[in-house]
Amino acid sequence: MDTTFDRIVQILREECELDESVEITVNTTFQDLELDSLSVVEIALECEDEFGIQIDLEEPPKTMGEFVALVDSLLNE
Image (cartoon, rainbow, N blue to C red; front, top):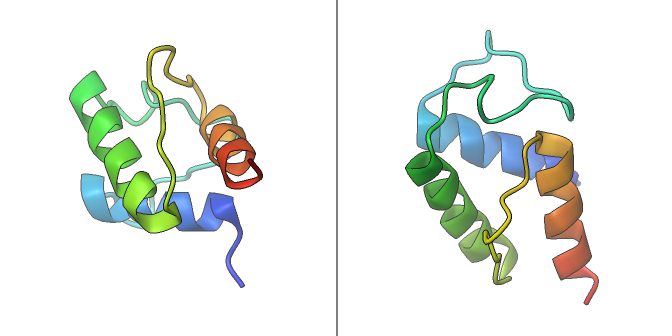
């Protein structure tokens, strides 16, 4: 079974057309990937659909680790 991180990375790669050569870790920031705020919102919407949750991006996470922690916390509510 894929982890939350693996599933989010897959969504990120598909939505932003990032190939496997782009390294994504828990410390990777959206800025590192050169994603603007609209791209982050689109990724959040895809994650909402994938995980069946509602993500509040009033204070958007800065790193992939923060984003994964946010999704995990919403899944555990």
